Picture 1 (cartoon, rainbow, N blue to C red):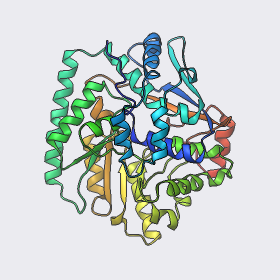
Picture 2: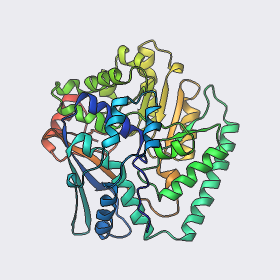
Picture 3: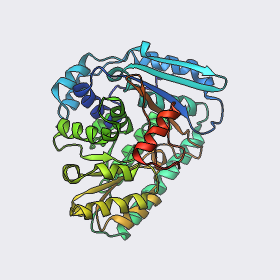
Picture 4: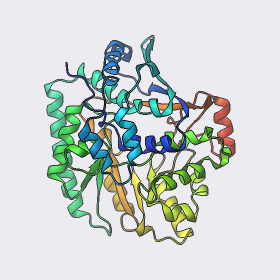
Length: 396
């Protein structure tokens, strides 16, 4: 059976961009990442333990190919010393452990952040593909193709009949929870061929390279969460993270993630300086309409023309939801829609809701206070309560 991981380049772009930032600013950070399944699978994930171990062994045998390094090097925002680091980089098996607790699959990556942070996306799509190999059959692929064809027609119709000031643009964000590598590639290739005027890229760097698409991504929650342990006053961790990002990328990759401690707390830190330097904001939890209206009101307050900014939506989107948000906002601000599971794993089988999140950094707990219930993940309730107190974040 073919290994799940085809290439070390088959990772989300924001993993590379955060990786470079940490290598330059905090290369000695020690972290722990934990795998969690949030829903009930069709069969116990513990059954996958031996297969996951084998796939991780394979992952740790891989290195970047020369053409992959050349591709990364030609991206304007990727620094040459980071590519030099990747030239010799290999995942270390000693930093990741797989175990079971009854029916529960447990995966912990622990060690230097610049060596373990990259495991996350690989672990997620390894578990996904192994899980669906035991469920997927020919009829499942046929159903996936039918649904994909319907999406293509739906987008053509809605985009041609919904005319706004700014164009409709969407991206593939489906790597982490995809049905399989073969299926995600078919989806991306189909969208690139059928909808080039609307489909503007993929977070999957391997597929972006292969199909000459724009790789999409900036930062994830772990980037800002890590700053909770970096020695700055806790109240100032978001400002410190955003400032380091500005200094690292100097105008590139200007979409800031807003929901690490909630939108209200983010906007309190997102002053005129940051609002001018960042191209826009990304939504990933809570009511997207409420979030977007808060963003637009903030730009008005700062006397910034929102038409020069972009709001990116990426929280559990499907085509209908994306167009509903587009209709609501696209006359006032540029928009973008990162559609994940609904593109890469809409096969008539319930997808897994799995994550692998940072839980500690430099021996201290870190946390995300989501604007949506069920997305908060933290081992330390005392730290969670303290974080809520500092940022006046209500219990959802």
